[in-house]
Length: 387
Image (cartoon, rainbow, N blue to C red; front, side, top):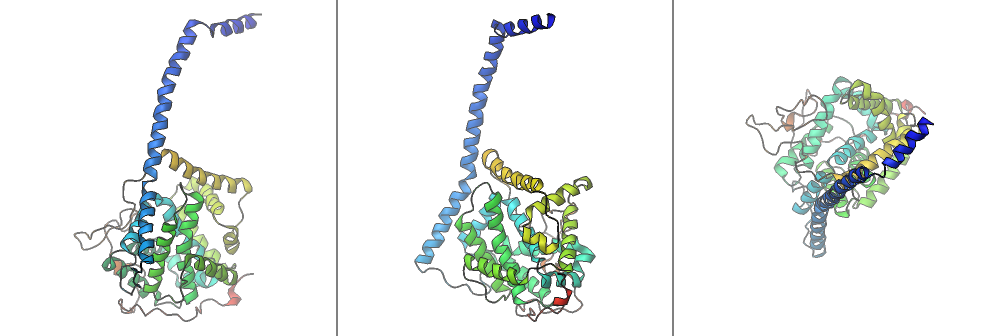
């Protein structure tokens, strides 16, 4: 009875003048708070799409120049991109800094699904001896070209250094072209799936044209003329060459171990599951990695897509330049790595482009861009492939 009486008193007190005053006070605070939130979201949306609008204008300018016949065929040694395309690529990295970086990391990861590529990487020993240095050197060489695409004196030395390194190994043209095709395809795929907005055709074209020019500087032959043709070529290559081998798994394990170094030990199982959830089924099959459970796969995909929605609605656009390579040379005559994905930024004090990568006992002439060997890779034979 006492309990019933207490409940009745509570019910009646809810309609007392004091209760209505407290409720009214809460409503008074709620209205301006909601108004502030709506204004904030509206401002974020306007700011978030400014770069997209600039990209559309720049892409229209490029297209108009093509229609007017004002685009001259690119010659070796020319800037890798026009001023407009270079600006589009920079705006793209401002809008999608994390996705753009991750897409290149996973593009390199996917190259290990080809036994000819993974066998070569494994046999060189570079991955086993110092995986972190190799990853850092590769990242900086690629960024030296990409982040300075409109400055030949800065981008071309990086590509010449890549040529010099590749000249010491027997790499087939198809393997080189497949790696290049992944650099063309993965950024649009990642941004389309997880970005805060759809990727623009101008962004796809600028990324494609940059890597096409990069391939020309690296003497890669038979590069398809269009993005769609690249996708068809890569599909055909994967049907013929992507298959499980022990070397795929060994190199992939080294990559995942390196990736885990950026996270606390207790997070390793979770990060490993995230990686499995991001990889496509055919990639996991080529590494003989287990499929994630449907719950984990849905959770990973859902979280990444939610991140895109949250970014679009609540996060203002990036202000700081996401580039990794320093714009200017330092007093010590070296460029600096402005940040690193690893705890230790090994090139924070500086690096020389011609010293990145492995040291060889004998060197080719760094200016000889025709030095790359294109003979078949003899480090892998079909007998080494595990079925």
